[in-house]
Length: 192
Image (cartoon, rainbow, N blue to C red; front, side, top):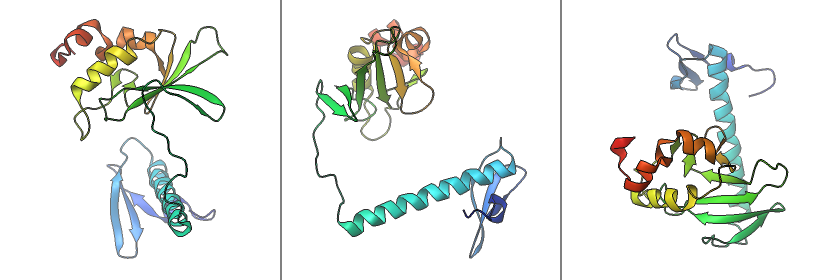
């Protein structure tokens, strides 16, 4: 979006929050944002378009340069230590959401109340877990990952999920239905 153009120059929003963008062929509905002002709704879709435009540009540059993949690829096996940007991580294989799901754990010395920081991806969220009903997902593997990888983490571990707010293991033990002893023992979802 150029500096002179505003979101309203690109489309409009109906009273139900449906967003339309202007195209060479007329208007096209692109989605709905019912709980936002028309300006916010249009801005949201303009930002999505700009992000897509950037991704296409980056892909085009990679294809043109011939650099389609990384030069240095390493398999992340369970328990391996890796260093990224000067930070050391332990990799815990935690399948369930996907076959290759992992947790990245790093000690955290800056705060005595935080033992480590855990990047949980789509394994664990604040109040929930990643889906297991998609291709590559497996409920039995997720249950085992929760039992052996997540439930064994210290309460003071800060969790940074792939989606949603940060949490702690203590908070998840207290409130997450998937980390309750009854579920971890039986795997019975009817108790959730």
